[in-house]
Image (cartoon, rainbow, N blue to C red):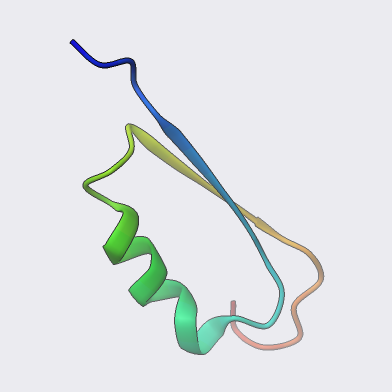
Length: 43
């Protein structure tokens, strides 16, 4: 049995891309942690 995988995503102003990125990674990891670094859009 493989070990659970965590994915960490650091983003800034990625409103246009974040949903697609998360959907692509959803089946790969047990958890996804998104860290926003001061976005000025709706990220």
